[in-house]
Image (cartoon, rainbow, N blue to C red; front, top):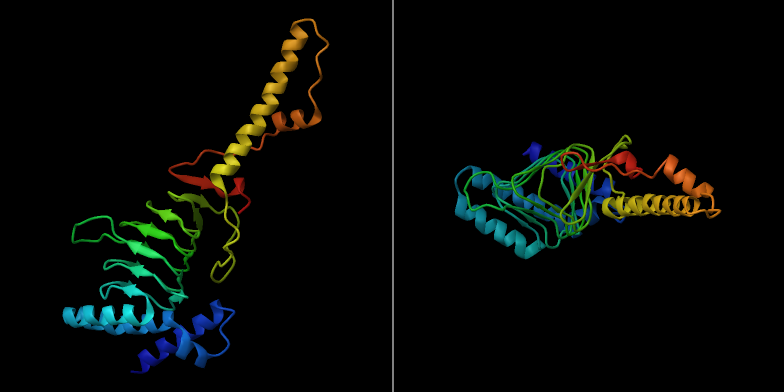
Length: 254
């Protein structure tokens, strides 16, 4: 009983730390559906492990009705999970969630197989998953990673990475991660857009060089290459292609 009370205190404390709108423990206790869903899931999971599976499923169904959050009673959830807002969150049967994980509304930890075994993702410690993101299949999202809003993640993610886009583009950070949850949702790399801009800048500089060369070989005076062109050719804004599906963080300043 004491362990359960201590766990509930940690859950309330995690909400206070991660939600600037939270003003008091009493407010969280009374008005945070993510906390309520987590507590009801722990009871359902307790019943599930003791083979009261029908009762556990009924309790999870009641949980969804009351909170708008669907957590299968078989899902394994670590300490201090925080589900902010929560409406529309779905966590599948074989999903595993580590400690200090943050989920926002509309997140799906779903399966892509009809097999009975492990078919849902594993989320390691200190991961933040943005609103509307979908993490699908038996994959691993590495520790300290951040999944951007509405991203669709279908491959495993290395630790300390950022995932954006559909399908998810994985960028491994080149900068050290600050302590605590990474809630900087505005800092998302545009991997495809920046790569195209890099190619266009280099192509334009090369075309100008080629045009100047043609004028000179044809007897014209030829307009000299500008300083901007020389700079781009000497030090192009190179974006390296992804290695094994992972982009380099130094190319995107993260």
